[in-house]
Image (cartoon, rainbow, N blue to C red; front, side, top):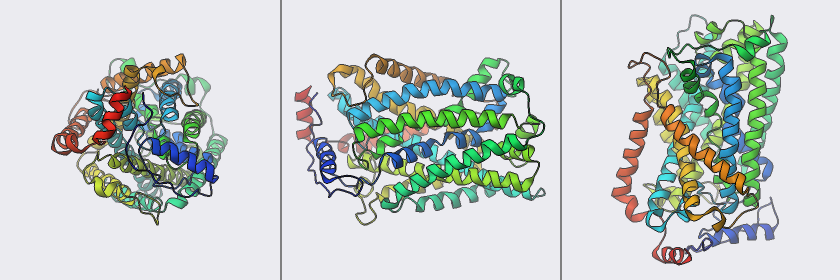
Length: 518
């Protein structure tokens, strides 16, 4: 493989305060070899990168926000043991992404890797698919996070005002306000590293406060046999195994967004080393926090049915109330969770905006002329950020029509992201794992095993997560994830034949160089 034989003119910005001039020049030179200019300053360091990567998944918050799915499909058993399994899968996925990010650090992430590694005849389409699936997954993930925040805000109000009846428009209004508030934090690039560090600290401090408070106040405690062995199947599926599988969506959701750090490759020094650290640290910190959090919370459960049927619509808030037996205390703990979730949403906006910006540099999206621009004063891709947040806002309106259809986007985001990861891995197998430049993070045979885990789990998710979460099926509880896939593929193919096939990616000189190198 000819390493990054691209034909774009590179410009090098002065070194940022986060590293020496020589480091900055070296990173910019490597980026220039890929054919791109250094358009964004490298404001992030390893701590702020880990902060934004972890806050993106924010696993203990995520398990709280989507707890109802897991409780219905297996009770405490599903979440506790499901987290162990999903962590194992995520180590494989994270290792696969880390190898590619270490070898080819680029803000485009998976779509860039797919283009570099795929057979020339199929490189454009493989890259285009990976880019669009990744972006759609990021948008859906962002929408599902802000929905959880909106439900939390409205649920707290309902807990304090028992006569208040929650309606869909209440949640949507909170959704839109929170989405806009979090949008503002990504409008100035220089403050993002500080925001990332602060949200990391807020998340960990809130985690510790809740971890100690709930079991300390709960009287009596649930038994160990209940916490570690109480299986509940409220799904209507006759098979407990099938109920367990569809419930895995709950722990899987919190680890599905592991590519977020890869899209900051041009904003951190030594990305070939730092991005793998951020990805693997996200899995490690995520598992420790989410697993210990769940065990601690489950010892505070008094009535599981009350959680499932809570008038607040927020099971974790009801759990806090059960444990503390105090509405004000429960609202305070939920407020900590809400603030933590806003940090997650801010990181989501960073992730989706960088992906849209990078993809648009290679003309992968309609309106790429504007989406690929970086505001030099604010040091952010402001158009890409604004459009992405606007799309998230529009998707929120879907909740007014069908809460079930909206919830299907959470499921869709998992599978779409895994598909976007799998495409460059398949291309890597075609090229040969030992026929590419290896970065500092390279696992050899263990990396191959990680690749196999990722591909196999992707196929599993596409098939098994398409089944309905409850039985019998009717329009109110149907899993619309297949319809979501269809809409995404339809939009993507229309754009491909109308525009992308002719304009997406690279000039002829670059194509010729890559063909010669192969």
